[in-house]
Structures are given as C-alpha cells and as structure tokens.
Length: 294
Image (tube, rainbow, N blue to C red):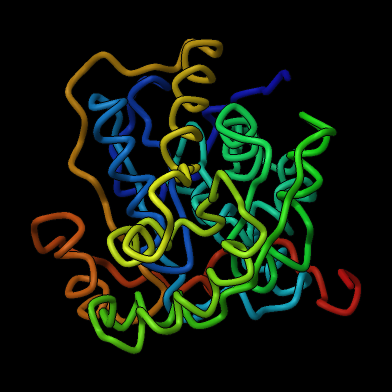
C-alpha cells in the first residue's frame, strides 16, 4: 500500500522543526488503553518520539455511534497534523473498526489500525478464535471479517464487554467485582472451546492477570499492540522515516482531566507523566454533521 508524506504542516507544534525522520509518531486512544501500544513502541522502536493523545473527555468509545467515532477521529487527526506527526497509530479498536477506512486517505501521513495486525497474529495461533471487545467493535464484525478474509476455515466468536473500559479507567482492576465481570464475559467463549483469545481493545491487556486466572492454560492470548508496532516498523522502513537519533521526551495530551490521566497511567508507565489538556474544539477541522455520517 502506498502512502504519501508531507512535511508542510501548521507551525503551532510544540515539537521543534526537524527532518521528517525526527517527527513524532502520533498515538491516540480514548484513554489509558493506548499505553499498551506506547509500551510496545518504547520496546521495539526506542528512537522514535511519540505524541500520545487520550480522548478522556469522551470515553468510553465503545458505546458511541459510528458517526461520533468518525467525527472524533477526524478531530484528533486534524490536531495531530498540526503537530507535524509523520505517522499515526489508532491505538483504539473501536476507532480502527469504525473510522479507519473512512479517514485514512484524508490525511498526508500513514494511519495504522490495530484490527488487521491482531487478526493476522491470531490465525497463526489457532483455528477457534475468541474476541473480547467493546460493544461497538463487536457490532462492527471487524475481527470476524478480517480473520475470515485471511483464513476462511477459522471459526470466530466474540463478546462485547461494556464494563471493562470503565473499570480499567477507574483503576478497579484488582477488585473482586472485576473478576466476576470477566468470568461472565469469558464463559461463552470457554464454552465454545476456543484455542486463541484476542484482546479486542487496547485497554484489555491491563486485565491480563485477571483474564489469565480464569482461562484454561491452553488458550493463547493475542495482544494486537505487539503486532501493530511491528507493522509500524515495517512502514517506517518502507517510507524511509525511521529515526536513528535520540528521541524527544514523550508528549502526553488529553481532552479531559490531566491529573486523572496522570494518576491512572502511573502503574503502567512506572512514573507520573506531565500531561497537557487540549481543547479539540479549537482545531480547524472540516465540519461533518453527524446526521450525514450515519
């Protein structure tokens, strides 16, 4: 797939002017879920500078309409374009499922989603594949479609999990209630004797200890965050955009409360990040009335 790259961005970026290779990679999610992708970027591509955006004022995305998701995605990408990103990772399965194909050609940088890398990894692991996802991602059927396009013999079952993201964002992972919720969501998949389980939301790897304790040890877990970053590395090499110089410090931005994001992310990052609040209403994005997107 061919992508064009343009460095003619607005001058309102906090990242200083630099060669395209030194421009940041944009990563966005509704909240802390995308930190699982950020962690993989640190591990696999340690020289890359990162701009992270959490749309915390509007989470969870999983119960939003497709029209809202497309609109939110356009706003975030328009803002990231102003920040001179060289690439964007949609570290959100709901956005990847509902908005990626609509918006990916509207911007002058490559935009990668998490659905296809996760699907490709899953079919290499097993033939009876379970998916836990937000209600919106499950309703889109993005994972079953992607998996069956790769391997038509694979069987896929999915469960919408509306309570997971709020529990993770509220730092309630270790509460007994969370384990009971997880037990309820996993039961129909275990009943189908799945051999592979996809984390169909970037928040869900945060629940790994809880989920692993409830699943048979034979079931393989697939974290799409690992595999989308492998795709990022390939894309950077293809476009000649890999950075070989030391990175800039990661810049964290949210649409909601910075202090809440800082507190929620400490356990995943190992430190308290400095977080900026961004008002997306000030972004000069095209106006797409929601009724026209239905």
